[in-house]
Amino acid sequence: MRRAVPLFLFACPVFVAAADPADDRAKLQGVWHSVAGAKQPVRVLVMGDKIGYAVGDATATPAVPGSAFVSLTEATVAKGVAELVITKDYTRKLGYRIEKDGVVVTLDDKEYPLRRVNTRATDPAAKELAGTWTLTGAEVKGVKLTPAMSGIESLTIVGDRYVVKAPGGKELLSSFYRLGDAKAGRADLDIFGMKADPSIAARLEVKGDELLFAQPLKPGGPRPTGFDSGAAEVLVLRATRAK
Picture: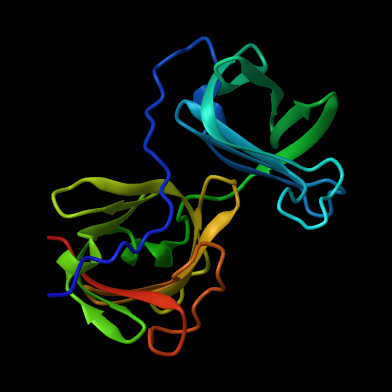
């Protein structure tokens, strides 16, 4: 008997923001990026009670001066300041100012204008992609797997969230997503991870009540060009629309 294969290599925990009319947490929820052409791009991700950000390219070799990265971490938000708890004894402050066309954040006394990334499917053609899809099978490197072997029960695209559940209903992943132009039931899907950049560049296709979904095996890998797992390092999922 084949053993279950862990296919999702990262997960964003689910956090529910407490109702607090005194702060702007609800308005800040989502993914924010610098405007095009910014000399030092900044990305900020606000999910529930957690905030993460990246300045420049913190993964570059050699290091890019001024670059920094803080993964999603507990934060308090009030009166124009978000205080991120990095460790028990160390915090970072991120100033913010909500404006009509976006938000201006302040890091290390520098201001960065940001715009919200569209993490909601607004294209009418995208409606056929939305909903919950129950897994019927998977493929990795040409090998077919049952849903139980894949460790995945369902995929859900709803509102601004992309959710993956394991058998029994346990959430493996809940994150923001960006849906590309949906044409003839096919679309590109960017799933955001801890670094406020798309960590999974996926592709999906819907035909009636059937879904085909392909993603690279490793976060940050290239977007699949098709749904043949034997031709590339991709995970292919097949699912039907939940009734």
